[in-house]
Image 1 (cartoon, rainbow, N blue to C red):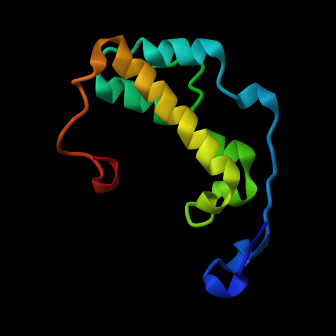
Image 2: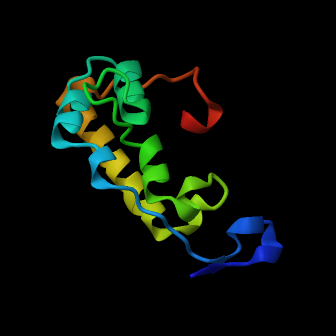
Length: 117
């Protein structure tokens, strides 16, 4: 699995790299339960993205990119790592679980980053 250096990937050109961190910083089942218990979309989003409102403050989305490291730690290179799609499928799964628990109509129609509507 290689990214071409000439295609604008700079130091991320070449073979796929990762540098996994220790398991102590991974989200736990308690983190998932606490995030799914959030009552509003902003609370759920902040818990999922940045760990706000979770007793551990583990970031189920943002920090996992850094936990995997290497290409996953770069916004430019991370979509070229196959783990990117597994990771984002899990985030989508958690969001679907939260929506199915009575929050299907709470996604904001405007505001926020334009990429996240």
